[in-house]
Length: 393
Ligand SMILES: Cc1cc2nc3c(=O)[nH]c(=O)nc-3n(C[C@H](O)[C@H](O)[C@H](O)COP(=O)(O)OP(=O)(O)OC[C@H]3O[C@@H](n4cnc5c(N)ncnc54)[C@H](O)[C@@H]3O)c2cc1C
Image 1 (cartoon, rainbow, N blue to C red):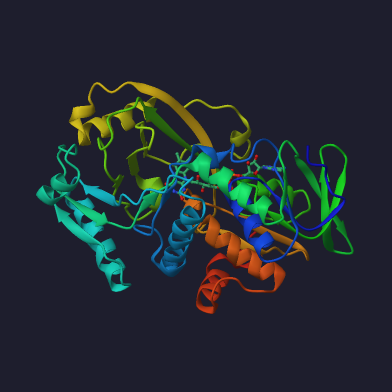
Image 2: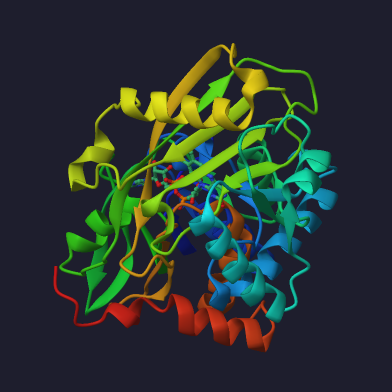
């Protein structure tokens, strides 16, 4: 069993994919990081993810950073001997009505202007690519570069790589507070009563980051949002060939979004987000079941699109909590307390961004930039926690 060091360079609070990726990048940059995870590594939203890795229909202003993020996952897959089941199957975004088509055309025009190889497919082109999708789809977007990875395997592989690079990581090690002296964060206090000192502390605890900072009067505008998913029994390989998604409308996932894909195991994974789910601060600590309305609307959507799956048997369902920020972007950078950093606010697509964010933050903390200058400038501008300075709790 790993024993808790008394002092390290950087403490990362939270062992989800964002904390693990940050620890990996810090260790590779020469720092000695310690990851403290309250429960099990990857056991929160990370393990409940569909882990699509792509640029399509995400923020246009993050285009270059997301392209970097996808490339980092491709390289990590190569380096780990494909232990993470990286599958570059592409993504189709289905259009059911005129509003979807208008939204799809606007996304594709803006993404193509940035150099993306995306296009609109006619209904017959879509059927040729995704033969089981015989529902009333009128057109689709096509992003050949979207991939998926196995979220459990990827978290384990990033943890192993971080340890191999010199990081220490402990699970079942909840942090209960920050050590602050002379206005500077000096380390953390554990539930066990032990204290660990460090030059820097990174909050990578998803929606729980707000509570840890809030206990010291530091306001972090992150809110838990309930997300859920269903898995159906194994189907023959190739039943669903792409990541099949709804075209995202203005207002993002809160206004309606569907994601359907087939895992390497053959299971069909699917969900439909119809509305903003429970965002009460304490909801994330309760054990939740998926709401019946969600089950029905998700099955309806699956069977509408793939009528051949009408008799499909459900295998399992799960609820997790994402961390949502007011402008749907991560908070990654220094907080208003010397020595305190944050990397949280996934807004439902933090798996994709995690390796890129970890490298950005490692560069900022160690003072030895890892991302190239243009990407670093984009990240510093887009993710700066200080954009919310002055926002009251
Ligand atoms: C159904 C579903 C589908 C998704 N699909 C995609 C997708 O296709 N692509 C994509 O990119 N993303 C997707 N996501 C989102 C993605 O999973 C998350 O953005 C990502 O996993 C966030 O990782 P995290 O490390 O920030 O959070 P978490 O995994 O929540 O990690 C935070 C960790 O902090 C720990 N912690 C909390 N408090 C403390 C404390 N006091 N001390 C120590 N540790 C603490 C928690 O136990 C937890 O393990 C999906 C999510 C869901 C639910």
